[in-house]
Length: 227
Image (cartoon, rainbow, N blue to C red; front, top):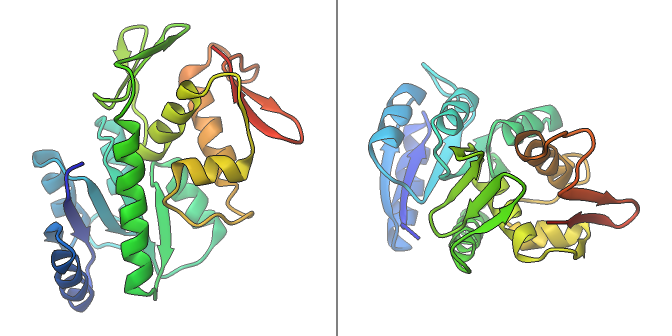
């Protein structure tokens, strides 16, 4: 996994402090102070992770994240916010963020979140060349999902969750087990993180999202993938 990180925040002091810490941990770091610059940098370079502030000038973090996913970028996104509102977190997750941290935070926790995100994505690259179900083809090593031969745009977190499902067909996983499997964010009951990502996977991959046949709900237990 590429250890290059794009750090996007309009607070100069925070950018300097975090970039210094990240470099000491062995990461290559680029920085941007607003959303427009961040979007351009993300298009031109391949990053392992983007640390993205929610409240940015010129173009906010949600817009940047949404544009990345529309362009098919599966880079992991860790969003920073000064607000702890559940609605903001759910919106961020729906638009493709993989993890959320509320300011202020401890740098040690940030480092742990970064390592978890990169570790999970690296694990998603292992395994057979591809998995096929219905008209969907999943290629973990290529970071690619096709439906009917056309690319499907998934967030990094959705991609990791899908890879976990296809590698373990016919196994029932609880919410906690899925959170542990894909990792990288704080599990809070309010955000219903797993439910949000499963809902989006169904929208993108199921023939009828309202009557799923691949990612099915096992009531009272969790979810099971059937191929």
